[in-house]
Image (cartoon, rainbow, N blue to C red; front, side):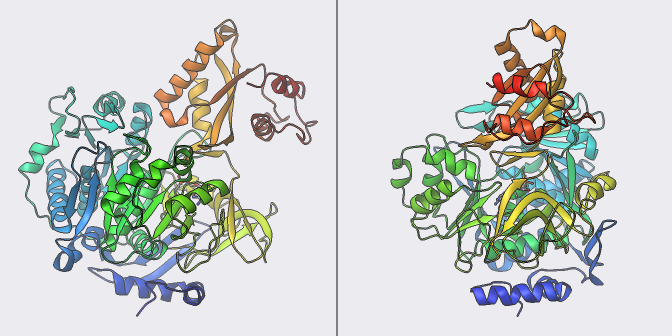
Length: 635
Ligand code: PRX
C-alpha cells in the first residue's frame, strides 16, 4: 500500500524522505493505486527547468471526470457530492448526489458538444457560485475542452481581455448574481465585454436572479431549456496526461494577466493527495472551502481535490456578512461541516464583530480549520483557534499559489505541531529552497531569503497560455534551475517556514493577488493623470490595502481632488473590478525615480506605511526633493 493517508509525524518524515529521494517511484505508486487510468504512463517524469519543460505521467490516458465522478457511482452513487448553500438562507440548500452530478455534467457536456465544443477548445465560464458552475467546468473536462473560469467580480474589460487571450468561442454565464442583499447584472457585463470579442459565437445563460435581460438572437440561449432536453449520459473523451485541463488567469508585474495552464494527470494526483492529507478528510466528512471557484483555491479544493476523493463539498453562494455576520457559523452548524477552509481577511473581518455571532452556533462538528491566500497574523490565528476551533481543531496555514496548483507548505493536522504564523513544513514531494540575492542557496536553519522550489511536483503549471517565454522569464530565470515563487520566507531553528510576503510588484489584498502594473495602467488612462505608482500598506482587515501616488497632467490641476479620487476608483472598477480599488490616493508633483527612470517603490512603500524614519539611501534619486514633499502631504 502506498502512503496515501499520513497519520503521524514519524510517518510524515519517512514518507517525505521517500518522496524526495525517489520522486518518480513515490508518485508512481500514488498514481497507480488511487486513480483510474485508461492507459498507464510510459514515463513518470521528464523535466528541465531551463526550458522550462515539465511532464508527469507522459503517455498516460484518462479523463478526470471518471476519477471525480464515474468511479464513485458503484459505491457512493447516492452520497452527496455537492451541498449547495444559496446566498439567501431562506432558499433551500440542495444536496447533489454523485449520481445526480454525473447526470448534470453529462447533460451539460452534451449541450456544449451541440454548440460545437470539442477537445482542446477553450470555454469561458463567468458564473456566480451556483451548481451550474461546477457542472460546466466538469462538462468541459468530460469533453476534453479547456475551461477558463473568470471570477464573476471582474469587470467587462477584464473579462474581454481574458476571453480574447484564450480565444474562447463560447461563454457560459447567468442573468445575474446575488451578493448579500445586492444583485449584479452579470449578463450586462458579458454583453459589454463581447463588444470586444468578435470570435465568441455562443453565450449560454443560466437563469438565477430572474432579472430582465437582453438576449441577442442567434448568439444567446437559455441553458435550462437546453439542459432539460439533453441526454443524461456522455462518454468521457480520453485525454493525454499532459493535455491542458484549464487556464486560470493571475496578475503579474506587467499589465497583461497571465493565463496559467494546468495539465490533467499531475494536477489531479496532487490536488487529490493534498486534499486527503492536509484536511485529513475521512469518508462521510463534510468539507467546506469558502473561496470562489473563480480562484485556484476553488478549482483545487472545492471541486477537483474533494471530488477525486469521493468527498462531500459545500458550494456557498453567499458572503460572510449576509444576512448577518454569523452566516459562516450558521452554515457550519447547519451542514455539520468537519473541515473549514477560509482566508485570513474573512477571519479578521468577522473577529471585529460581536462574539455572539459565533457563540450562538454549535461548531462541535469541526475537526480542521484551514487558512489560505495571505499570511495569517497572530491575532487572527488566536481568534480563529479560540473562538471557532475552541482550541480543539488544528489550524492548517497552507501556503501555495495559482501556479503551484495545490498546497505546498503546510502543517498536516493532528500530525505536525503548529505555530501561529508559520506554514510549517513542506508537503510530501515539495523541495523548497531559500536563496540569497546573489543566487546562492541558504542552507541550514535560521535563514531568510527568497522562496524557490528546486524540483517539480505533479501540479506545477506547465506554461502561460500563448506565451511560454513569459512563463520562463517570470519563474525560471531569477534563480538557475529553480522555480521562483515571488515570495520571501524564513526558516526557523526547527526548520519551519514562515512566508514573509511578496518580494515583487504583486500585492495581496484581502487574499487577492493584484499586480501593480495593471492598476497603474488603469489609472493612467484617466485623461487628467500623467503617471502613477501603487504600493501596499498594512490594513487591519484586508492585510494590505492599496495606496496610489498620482501625478496629474496640467489639465488635472484645477480639478476638484475628491471628484478625481472617485473618478480614478471608478476607472479601476471599470477596467479591472472593485477588488482593485485604492484605499488612499495622494496627488503628487513627481514620483521618486532612479537615474535610469525606475520608480523607487521602496520609498513609496515606507511613506504609505507611515514608516519614514529610515528611508535608506535617497542620494541616487534623480529628484530627491520630491520625497520630502510627498511625506509632508501624506493623506
Ligand atoms: O504571496 C503568497 C500568498 O498568495 C500568493 C499566491 O496568490 P494566488 O496565486 O492568488 O493564490 C492564492 C491561493 C493559493 C502567494 O505567492 N499566500 C498564499 N497563501 C499564503 C500566502 N502567504 C502567506 N501564507 C499563506 N498561507
